[in-house]
Each structure stands twice: as C-alpha cells, then as structure tokens.
Length: 180
Ligand code: MNH
Image (tube, rainbow, N blue to C red; front, side, top):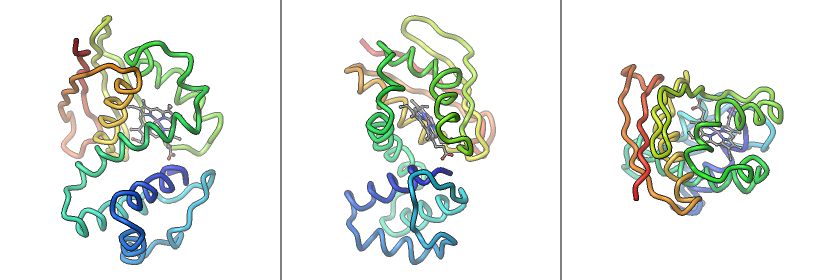
C-alpha cells in the first residue's frame, strides 16, 4: 500500500484523537517501517491492518466504521493531491463509473506499484449504478466512504447499499442510487 494512504490515515487519527493516540497505535503495532512513511514509498498492507486494529481497540470503534470514516477523509486528500483526475467529471456517477478505466489507470501510471481494487459495472443509468468491488484487501467500507464523498463533492446525495459476495469482503456488490 502506498505511503500516501498511511500518511493520510495517521493525519486523520491525529486530527480526531491527537498525537498521543498516533504514537500509541504506532508503538503497539510494532511495524517494520517504524511508522515512518513517505508519500511515494510502498509498505506492507499488513501495517495498515495493524494500525487500524490497534486504533479500533484503543478508541473502541469497530474496524468497518473506522474504514468508512477514513474513506470520507481520504477522498478530499486524493482530490487535493490529484485535482487533474477529478476535474474532467461533471457528475459523481460518471466519476465512479470511470475509476476502473480512467482514474485508477492514471494512478497506476503515477504509482506503478499501487495495489488497486477493480470495479466491474453491472448496470448504469442516469441515476443509478450497480458495480462489484473486488480486492484482496477487502476495504469495501473504505470504498463506500469514498463513493459517498464523491457525491458530496458534487453537492449531491446518494443511497449506497451493498451485499457481500464473499464473507471476507473481498468481493462486494454495491448499488448506488442518486437521491433527489
Ligand atoms: Mn482510489 C486505493 C487513488 C478515487 C476506491 N486509490 C487508492 C490508492 C490510490 C488511489 C493512490 C492507493 C493504492 C495503494 O495504496 O497501493 N483513487 C485515487 C485517486 C482518486 C481515487 C487519485 C480520485 C481522486 N478510489 C477513488 C474513488 C473510489 C476509490 C472515488 C471509490 C470507490 N481506491 C479505492 C479503494 C482503494 C483505493 C477502495 C483501496 C485499495 C483496495 O481496496 O484494494
């Protein structure tokens, strides 16, 4: 996983729970990197699992809730770092439908070792999108947060339903319905 994701995660923890919590989860996670991340570096995904698990225990919030919240936070960070990726879209549904064929293709050029999920579109209308998230990382709640924030970014509202196609969350079907 790219350093930018770790960096943003720790910034979110600092903003919400303070530096003492950041230090505490880094120490308890006993990380190979020592908890020092550079934006363009690549780190073992297990370090993210360890950090999120420690934070979950420390503040007594379930891991899926944390990932969902992190998705909201990460969207703004990604847009700030890569405004060029988002500026060509005029609607949230068209942006989300283009992650696989455009956005993440661009990301892969910038970061060749990025480990990205895949999104397979099952059905698309003006107001609805049904797609399948697939990733060995199983970060579907992060995906849910990112999708919701995409709508907020365009000043719109969405209803996101999902169904786990695999119990481990590595394959999840999402249904997005634009509200209003
Ligand atoms: Mn996207 C991971 C870039 C929009 C879903 N995304 C990543 C990573 C980068 C990235 C960088 C980290 C890869 C790694 O650590 O190896 N993503 C972007 C950019 C935009 C973006 C620049 C646009 C701005 N991404 C979105 C949107 C979604 C999404 C919108 C909504 C579903 N991305 C993901 C998910 C991951 C990810 C989920 C986590 C990796 C995984 O699930 O396997």
